[in-house]
Amino acid sequence: MIPPGTCRMCRQRPVAAFQFRDGEVRFALCSACDQTPAAKRAHEALDGYDIRNGCIHSPGKFEGERRYVPYYWAIYLEGGADDDGRVVSVRVEEDDKALFPELMQRHRVRLIEDEAGFVCEVR
Ligand SMILES: [Zn+2]
Image: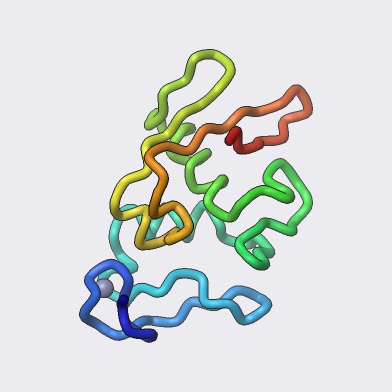
């Protein structure tokens, strides 16, 4: 186990606290690791969302989805996903697991966008 207050990515330096509106720590990363491409993408993708208990509460296309869904949707929009015309499949990288420990046992995240424009995870 990584001691509390220690960066999840390098497992060495203390955490630079990023807070959700409700006070939950967003990413337990040090200020150096928070500059990684994965961390930057996560901050951009999740900026402004109200996230509680790992789920998105803000109204809109990601409402009710897990907090990592906008992150993987951003990867898809950048061309980093397999797309069979219906289901988008994005590989879970090791750096992602430092940001989203709930994906520790996962290899891919699969997403669909419905006719109304809502993005949903397919399990
Ligand atoms: Zn670090």
